[in-house]
Image (cartoon, rainbow, N blue to C red; front, side, top):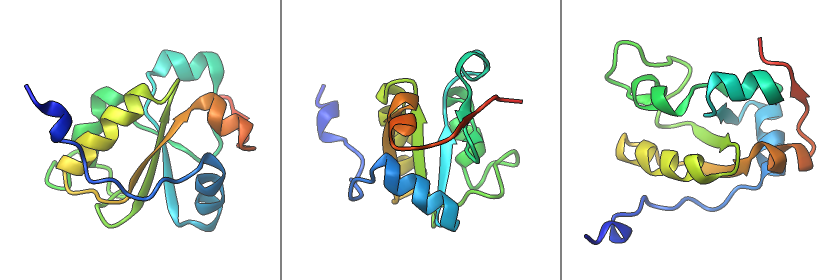
Length: 122
């Protein structure tokens, strides 16, 4: 009933431009959580990981055998989707898995507007 009280701890906001710069330095892992068909039609930010929303819990859970070994709770994670709505829910999900430095960058448009290079998804 009072789910709004169960919000994830909020890390300071990170702009799309800050995420792009952090990614270049190796300080930020940028993750596109859109579905495969979305990436095929509009591309992906160069250097971003693709982990769909459906696979987030599996790939981010440090205890799961199919986790992404490049990702750990002590890293800075920046998520984007098409509009930012799914990324908002994903931030809460990752907080429940022990990630404290997770940011919602909004949508692909926000990334592109901040200067991210969009490339074809392979």
